[in-house]
Amino acid sequence: MKLNPKLSRRNLLIGVLQGASLVLLSGCEKLFDSLSQNKKIQSLLEIAENGSRRAQRLVTPRNKLAKEFDAKDISPKFRANGNPPPITMEYTTDAQNHWTKWRLEVSGLIKQPASFSLADLKSMPSRTQITRHDCVEGWSVIGKWKGVRLEEIINRVQPGTDAKYVVFRCMDTDSDGANYFESIDMIDAVHPQTILAYELNDQPLPIDNGAPLRLRVENQLGYKHAKYIRALEFVSSLNKIGQGKGGYWEDQGYEWYAGI
Amino acid sequence: MAETSAKPPLAGRLVYRHNRITRLTHWLSALALMILFMSGLQIFNAHPYLYWGSTSDPDKAFFSIGASQNDDDVRGFINFYGRKLDTTGFLGVQPGVFGPQARGFPSWLTVPGYYSLAAARRWHFFFGWLFAMTGVFYLLYNLPVGHVRKFFFTPHDIKKVPAMAAYYLHVRKTSPQEGEYNPLQKMAYTGVFVVLAPLILLSGMAMSPQLNIAFHWLPALFGGRQSARAIHFILAFGFLFFALGHVFMVLTQGFLNNMRSMTSGWYKEKIPVVIETRRAASSPRGTPVSSEQEAEKSNETES
Image (cartoon, rainbow over all chains, first blue to last red; front, side):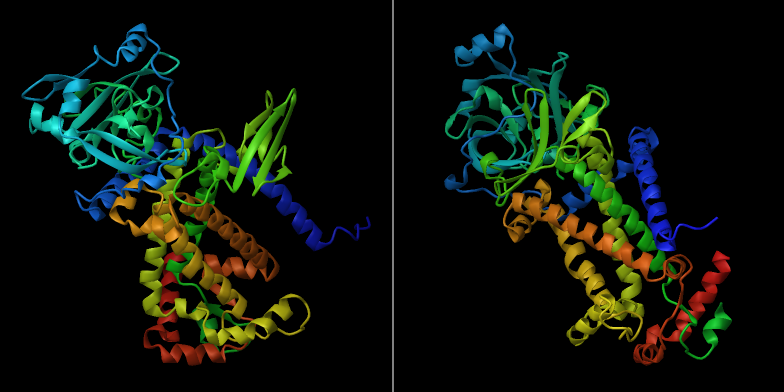
């Protein structure tokens, strides 16, 4: 049989490589899909999360502040993301009445359980900061926040030494009715810029951005910044909170440490 | 093998070119870069827009991948400074089981293939650490033995570039190469070591809110966090460009010989290696004796 002159060694090589790369690509996709859903591989990859947290905290002085911007840097619109605002009658009525019924309940491993109205929080010393908000999706906006430092609350309720985390209980729910919640540890809780904000850009916190009260934790990504907060809970472990990962998004695979 | 290399330096003899640390870190980096690139595209898909500056004003994206729908007609496009290019089927819209599906980069290019920002981030950060640590390990081992100097591009190499380019472009018949690496190779590898790798690591770290607190200069170095994100994306394609060129050269400049040198370490030299001896002599720790000793060691363990 006469060999097709066009079927030179080079063409053959190119053809084989093209075929192989196609097989490889579709194989690759299936491989990485199944690896991504494999528990052992997932826990291996999770090593990086602890590594990032330890390494990043090691190089960050404890009370060093995130960059604060100028008024001219404020974004024209502060983009809202995540769950839609709560739609319960209780929430919408209270919103119309300027949050006269709303209380921040504080419980858990503390010496002084407490409950604060929005007026109580506003009467405490406040902090104002113009900071950049970074979403896990990749976008960033700059806004001016005013609120009470979380450490201010901590000083009043006096958590015990066994309290390691603050859990934020929220009023917003996903389409399945599951409530949003988040948690940070005491190191981030007492950071000078970690505040419970009730104002955005000199206006009462808009409903889309978490009214009446939301968290600002400037060393982490947006999904840690719990909105529509109704209660704080001081706990020693996150194991029994939600599915045990420490947050709504964490239970769906996102890292608890969102400093990266 | 050790006997072969003991022969006088002649064209065509086998030389022990890549020590075992170089070979190990080469394949680890190749794997890491592939996964970093593909998981990075998945992360990009979560917000397929690029901006300059600190923030992301939706109207000011200089690059985006999008989809638009006109009745039943779904079109994918890229937008670069207002210039739109239809990319239906590849970028923006990919064929799916239930008809066209809006998606930035297609499934076959991302890790994982299904949409999961959370999973992509886990892959990306694990292999980001692995890539960085592999690089540090490589340098700690290879800088002292003088391995890096062999392919480091110096001003001295600039005037040799045209002759080498002429050879590759088939304008010149004989290779002007002296020593183990030619000036174009040196340029490519030095570019990766000095420009691409450090900048892609720094621009990646410039997106971390915690590291932004630790090092305020980090996002500023790139002109803001969104600029750092855009530069990170562009550099990733710099790596892709390098990888494609690298693989092309490996395939066309003696595939088996190149593969042998990056798996067993032994490379069939095409040119006299007199220059190599002279350079080795100037570095006491990188003498041919020490590399042969290592070659013998590696033969024991790897045979």
